Length: 282
Image (cartoon, rainbow, N blue to C red; front, side, top):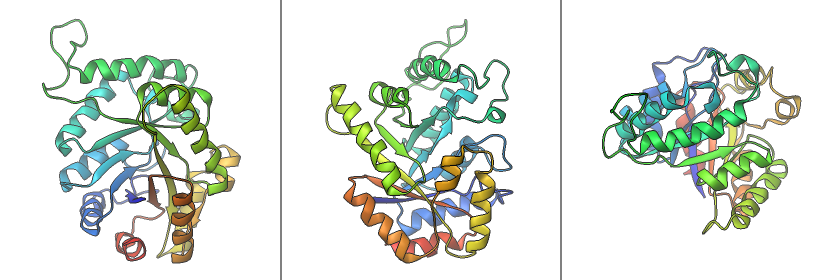
């Protein structure tokens, strides 16, 4: 199983200038992927900015939004942003998509919480059209340079519609930062949906897991703050790893579940957390 690491872009009041250094150190440490966590109504750095910074600071490590709340964006605008980041990175980006559940995240007029699922269905068509170089607006020009690729997508969420989007548009599924016993049914449902849809092979399965190995009290406080307005079942069960033993145990358990990659998401922006995690996982 591959081991990735998150960027601390949604740690409350993150020091934004640390993100490129975090990305470079994560690549040097040999992690498979750098991932962002997406929210708008929170004092962090947006997914697209953090991913662009990471793209410019690295050359080989994979990039992933885990997950970006796509229906909060106008579809064509997001498609152009994602294509640009992927291009800057040399084709290392995977777009992880979720629909979101907090009304305060939906700030763009016409992109409210209500109707977000239907909007995303339409936006997925728009992404493919924009990345394929079709003209945008009423003019003759595409929004992206020639040679832009179809950016691979993963989907998060717990509904049947999320799995339907995954098998139609995506390459796999992202599970949340919950105990393995709670995420296992979602991974099994993703596999079953994939097979029933007649997709070849198997979906890529990615799981998220929070960690704080230095200042564990600050890490716990940050996680509680981040999930303060989240659905209670998610906030109550979000897992924070604070020791080598629990990190190693999660790796074993998710390997047994057939998960392809685990992304350890930082609960603080302490740059030394990259080295602490690498010392355990390498």
